[in-house]
Image (cartoon, rainbow, N blue to C red; front, top):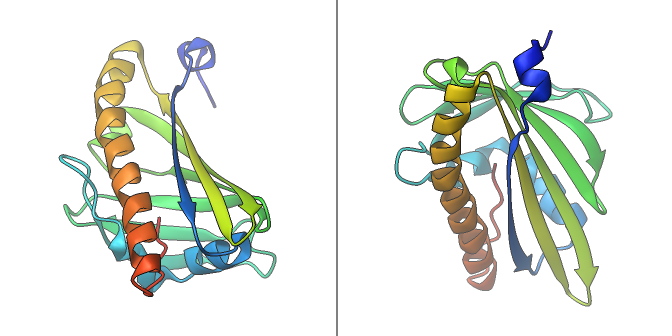
Length: 170
């Protein structure tokens, strides 16, 4: 249950964009391919993903929970809460291990897709929810590095497509 400080505190938000050659449905399908997730390399203090495993896999995709273990040993759960692969996906990141568990109640990540011709404009939006005012300050610093990690990941996805090796990961 959220406390009063959390209810009043505005989340930290940012958005990253890239144009990819895959159709939205193909991007969404690859997100479910957990062997691709270690392609997320992080940035600075943001660790890359070491392994992702289904904790719960639902037939309708919504409600699927993925346990992520990062290169630094930290972990969290990513739950798919919206699945419209032709135009939008939304994931909730939660159950963080320390030290992030001390700072954040959760992150929301939304993938929006807009198909134009043979390209898809991808917008990845984030909302980071801090546990306190002090945690919000530290989370804001973390968000700078997370944004750089997401920009790099989207660029790598584009580069891999051009090279003929389409990879998508979280």
